[in-house]
Image 1 (cartoon, rainbow, N blue to C red):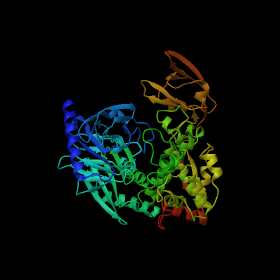
Image 2: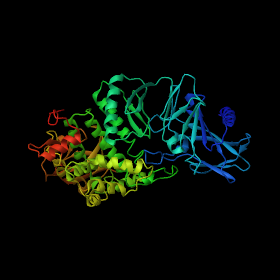
Image 3: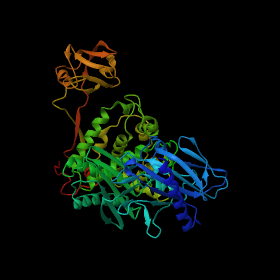
Image 4: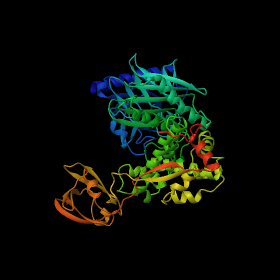
Length: 608
């Protein structure tokens, strides 16, 4: 390691000479990244800047990253932070909190900082290095000077000659530097450096779209490009805006099961596996996450809540609008697949039926509002009490459906949620300002010409259940309960993990028969009415009972056998399907057709 530090100091001197020769009339932050032994997983990182006034200067590494609203402690990967001035003199460095290093910079004009960063986590939001690739999200590994985040940034990558770079950032062939407007944009721009990635591209309405594939897979390049272009065309046409000249879809294709995507301002990074493009389920998921992440180019990357607009990366940043930023992005991700012809109508409606079933059977929806869940995500990411939380992705997705259909109904299909997002894009994204938490509601009221205040009070800031049939009816649809033949007619209210060797109760639904009887999480299930019971046969046992029957459930709790008398309730709704009503009126037909972008020949076609 000492040898590496000596090499880093030499590396820093070379960097200093390089930038000095180029001149520093413009104040900026200059970075360089390289590596020596890929199997060590250590990046060598340097940053250089003009010393601000004062006797010391702080450098800091982010504690979280946009797109993942939880503290991630990137500082744990930082080693051997060193600093020196323009003469190569070492400057004292002291770590003053978990993410900040203070440099005694008295008598210095310029400061160079160098350190090692351990990168051995291959997912879309982290950084990774091996002998096949270098992948880095700058937010995770590049320090910044607090208060100087708006200064221009340059990056030099010291890489093997035959390795190429995929990124959305612009490269200057003249000086070999990537040049970025400020640290916020730099932090939001992943880089893939590899000799083996495959690059595809297409053009749409004046912008270039690139697809970089790292990893081996059996994809049909022409088909993938055609299908991704359909998604791009649908969303660009809907937003009536292309806020970039070039956009990069970056894909890591893995041989093992994995799925992760992260949005960025002019790119997205997606890690997916096992990559089998002949498998329809995999391919639907591949296109689905692509659609979701691309819509983020507007929603959250540019239409961004004020609470996370140019945020403080050293601490939590709060907003009640994550259900909009993430959940309604999920809504448009799926809807875009439908509108682009990549999802069949019946399949799309079946997905909504499943969403509604999950909502109806999830107790957390009645405990906390979606605005509270958005605000509390920083705490809930480490775990919340059972039956109290849920995903703002899923609830925001469902609220997107409700708001879209309600706006269409109230305006006789003259306006929709699409119009709301076009308005938000003009008012906030194109004016480069954050959206206050209350302004999403104001935008809906303005565009629709109707007040949604009570709806937000009830179902966004409150927990009033949603009347699904009311909203589906606006599009000439009905919600039909579908009973599974294999499901019992009774309801117990437990979730289990395990098998016929040992089954543990993993959760008890609040106010369920099991809860009222005194059963608890982590009880080991032994028997029902004296008959051995486990995860594989409990449904078969319960199928012999009717609502109101009293059963004896035997468990082991704290090494003791315990019996509990449970009065079974009527089974909850097992599943739904969504069907078209037989005689929709003219408005219902118009809403369904424009909402799903149905053509005349498939508006009522039976599609799978």
